[in-house]
Structure formats: structure tokens, C-alpha cells
Amino acid sequence: MVKEITVLSGKGGTGKTTVTAALAVLTKKTVLTDCDVDAPDLHMLLKPEILETQEFKASRVAVINQDACVQCGKCEEHCRFGAITKQVVDSILCEGCGVCVYICPVAAIELEKRVSGYAFISKTKYGPMSHALLNPGEENSGKLVSLVRKNAKMVAEKENCELIINDGPPGIGCPVIASVGGADIGLIVVEPTLSGIHDMERALGLLNHFKIPALVCVNKYDINEENTQRIVNFCASNGVEVVGKIPFDSIVTESMVAGKPIVEYASKSKVSQAIKELWELALEKIQLTGLAKV
Image 1: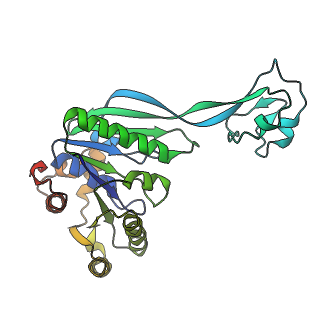
Image 2 (image 1 turned 90 degrees about the vertical axis):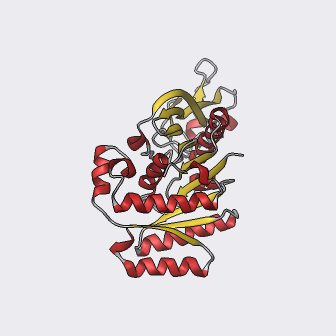
């Protein structure tokens, strides 16, 4: 069976995508996904070549049949979003609630599905990749995340891959729930700050709710070793293993500017060595040690 690891953080800016891109370099027989469909950025490091594009239709917009419309104005009167003016629908303001359809006395209005974003299946030098992009202002990102994961599993079966690595979205909302449901392990990347610790606890609570085993990696652990120790103590008291501590190094920023994963840009750096060690431990936990390239 294909194993699945979701990298999450509880908040943005902890280095989750940087770690995920590094893990992509260190493994074989792996499918990669970017589940942050609202603001994807994994592609900037992995540089995927798109093979397939799929329209994602999740929202609806009201459409008025002008030939059938009797100009009664009831739709404009009852639209609480102000999306209808003189029997013309503003597709940006329309929320697809359906009140106008219900209130129209001559059934001149219908709700039509519209394209809310796109899902992609791509190839990278590190393996296949499933990712997506939600159009600005659109909703139902959780459904698009589910589609990304579904495509990843399809590719994994087709390509005979043994592991899927999901770069999860920040926070603990619907897209995050969609990215962790059914995963084998959740790897939380946390920074040693008060907000980082707070949101790590929320992410652990989410994984615990869905009964998904959790591992923790402390990124830039040496910028505040007192908070790092707080993280270690909290994890120990809650039966969660800290599998890695990644030091701060400006070479990570250099690698991002160069558009390369850190373990490829500077394979001998302390950061790269720390990521390699944490990945070996994570693969042991998921019982897929044969996938490591290191």
C-alpha cells in the first residue's frame, strides 16, 4: 500500500515548504503534492513540468435568461449580496446562494457551475507531482485539496510509487483537514516562537482528533533554545517524538533565491545534514526505510 505523509505547521512561515522540497530530493518512488491550493509555492523549488490540466468546478453563479425575464425586479430586491442590477448578474459579487432562482416567478434564472481553479499533474526531476491553484476569491479549497490527493494516489498507483509527501496548507482549517485525513503520519514543522508553539499545539490537537500519529521537527531551533526546550518538553509529556532540530543558516535563503531545495544547493551544510537525519527517523516510523537516498 502507498504510505502518505503530510507536512504541516499550524501557521505559515515555519519552513514547511522548504523542508518538504528537501525531502523530495532525499527520496525515491515518491509522489509530491502541494496542498496549499490558495497560495501554492512548492513549484518554485521543484519546477514542475505540467502534463495534465483539470478544471475544478465547485462554485455556482446565477444566470438570467433575458428572453424569459419579465423585468419584475424581485431578484434584485431579494439579493442580499447586491449582485443583480437591472437584471444583470455580477459574477464576482454572486455567491450562488440560489435565492434569486427560488424567488423568480417565471423560472428565468438558473445556477451554473463555474471554473473555480485548476488541478495539475506534473513531472519534476524528483518525481511526479500533483498540485493545484484556486482562482482568487473562490471557495471550496478543501474540495480542491481532496482532488489533489486523489490525483496523487492515482499517479502513485500508476507509477508504482510507495510514498506520497503532502506539503500541507498553514492553519488548522478545512484545507488542512482535507490534507491530513487518512494520512499515515503528520510531520509538524515548528519554529521556537510563542506563536509557533501555540499553533503546533493546535496542529497536534487536529492530528490527535483524527488519530494520525504525529512527529515534530523544530526549524531554526537555535534562535531561541529556551523555547526549543519548551517544545521538546511539551512533546515528551504528550508522547510525541521530536525527530529533528534544524539550525538557522542564511544559506537556506540563498537556496530559495537560487530556486533549489537546500539539500541540493548545499548538501554538506548543517541544515542539510539535520534534514537528512530527521527524514531517516521519519521513514523508520512509517516503515519505509528503503526509500531513502542517503
